[in-house]
Image (tube, rainbow, N blue to C red; front, side, top):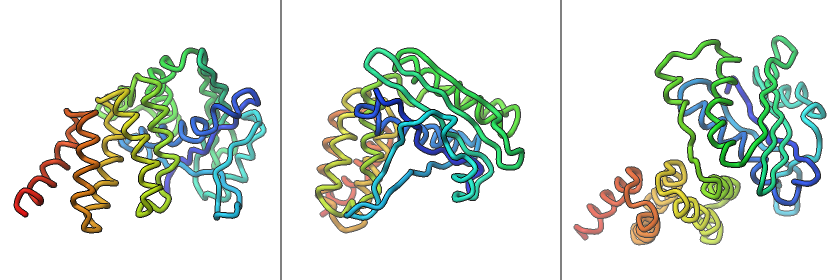
Length: 249
C-alpha cells in the first residue's frame, strides 16, 4: 500500500472547461516522480462517478480546504494525502496544495505556486522534494539528484502526456482506445523528443501488441514514435526487438 496518495486537484470555476485533465493528472505525474526517484512510495487515485459506460473521472469546483481529506484517506487506507486547487490559463498557473497526515491528523505542508505554465514545470521537482522531505525527512543525495530534473520543460508536451494518461487504462485492445492514447503520445514527442515518459508509455502499448502476436502493428507504432523521437533509448530498444523478430521472418 502506498505511503502517499495523490488525488485530482479541485478547480476554480474559470478553469473547469480548460483544466480538467491537467487537474487530474498533475498529481499523477507528481506521484510518478516521487516513485521513480525512490523518494516516496506514492500513487494516484482518481475521483470517479457512476456513468452509463461504467465509471467516469470527475474533478470538483472547490477550494483546497473544501476537500474531505480524512474521508479520502479512510477510503484509500494510506498515511498521507496530497490534494489542492488549480487555476490555469494560457498566461498563468496557480496552485494551492496540502499534504495531510493521517497519524498526526493535520496538514503538514502548504506548497503553493503562481507563475507561467513553463515555470510550473521547472518548479515541480522542488514541489516533489518538499513533499518527500515532509514525509521522510532529508533526502539522500542520490535520491535528491534523481528528483531534481523536470520531466519536461515544454508545456504542450506535458499537456499531451496528461491526455494520454487520461485515456490509458481503458481497453487498449480496442483499436479506438489505443489510437486515443497513441495520438497523444505522438503529439507529446513532437513537442519534446527528449520527454522520456510518453516514449515509455508508447513502448508499453507496443509491447502489448507484441504479446498479442501483432508484431507488424507494433512495428508501425515504433515507426511513428521513431519519427518524432529518434534518440529515445526506449524506442530504440523496441526497434531492435522488432527488427530481430521481423528481420528473421
